[in-house]
Image (cartoon, rainbow, N blue to C red; front, top):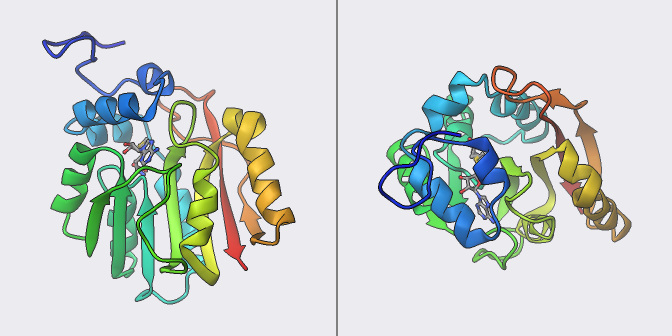
Length: 216
Ligand SMILES: C[S@@+](CC[C@H](N)C(=O)[O-])C[C@H]1O[C@@H](n2cnc3c(N)ncnc32)[C@H](O)[C@@H]1O
């Protein structure tokens, strides 16, 4: 854990153990607000692979690069940067941390950015997006499994929801939600990666999978 600074007990740099132990959404927002300026330097130095892997699923399943794509839990906009580079031109970012979003806004790749909380009702009409991506957001102390109900709702019929899930929460809680949405006929699985180390230079034991679903 990195040393605290003068803003209470918050660490001064991005710290994995603190975010995974966040008790509620207010705390996770506070932690990310505090880390926003260092986030990219830290996570990229740890070999963060999730946006690279996720972009392959987007390229395969989201053919229309002019269609609206929601980046949910966009953080500083790393995924938006990758998608814009690939030619996706109608990107919207939401996140619970205003300071992370400020960095995303600064990249100039999003049509719209806004503070919203995954796990609560999202302020978008049903079927607003051709696709949703969410990278690094479904992990301990982060957004809850019920977020997926809303992400499926805001995706149009035939659209894709593409997201990473840490393997520990997949087993504990998310797996049941993925299955429930399939049983309810809300979506069908298109593909999934095998588990992989998404921060190989920091903690190779931490693993996640990326999933792609088609909404019905
Ligand atoms: C590890 S970062 C990933 C950011 C970005 N998607 C990426 O791949 O670099 C996790 C992000 O999820 C956001 N987050 C955590 N819980 C959330 C929630 N309930 N609703 C919205 N955003 C949330 C955090 O503020 C943070 O920006």
